[in-house]
Length: 231
Ligand code: SAH
Image (tube, rainbow, N blue to C red; front, side, top):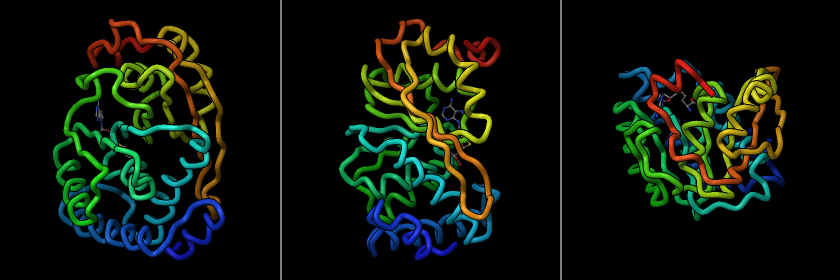
């Protein structure tokens, strides 16, 4: 898929003009350049990058339609999916791009600078060490199991804030297994958006959740414990 085809795919839905497409082009140029030196993504073919990274990230906007947020954090953003892609589209939202790996943050900083993204802050840290109740929205793609993500994300959100968990075909099953974690953390399910990447490239499930109450202070627990004994 080309960038023009991407723009046509979202015609009438998203305004992907020259400004956005130019930034996407430069972003992918940098991703290709840096990928030669360090392994940022296994997806190496340009058309595939557009589809599996840009288009997939942009599908998040369907699940987020009607949800209001001024601050957003992408947890485990890696090379910037979906957070960096969405930050290009949502200039009035302050985006925090969070990743525990230094080299990924170095890449994100280079992209931020090259593209002049003033609404983006890159943070090299672990989710469990961040300040609480600071963000209206948290997103995460290909991050961890849903109960683990819930425990890491819920404390970061303001009450009434949303979490968008971007999952594959097993998303629904994970949601069923997360009932206990959701109850314990005061999070409820809002909606699930099922999407298919064009050309049979995969089924996606974007799950929107809402933090309804303050998170008990004992969360998040230490990462080793979250992992060993998920909620
Ligand atoms: N969201 C990206 C990357 C997914 S890979 C995509 O969809 O392509 C998961 C990323 O999460 C890795 O880059 C890893 O460094 C980061 N990560 C793992 N545990 C983390 C934690 N506790 N806090 C912050 N980042 C974490």
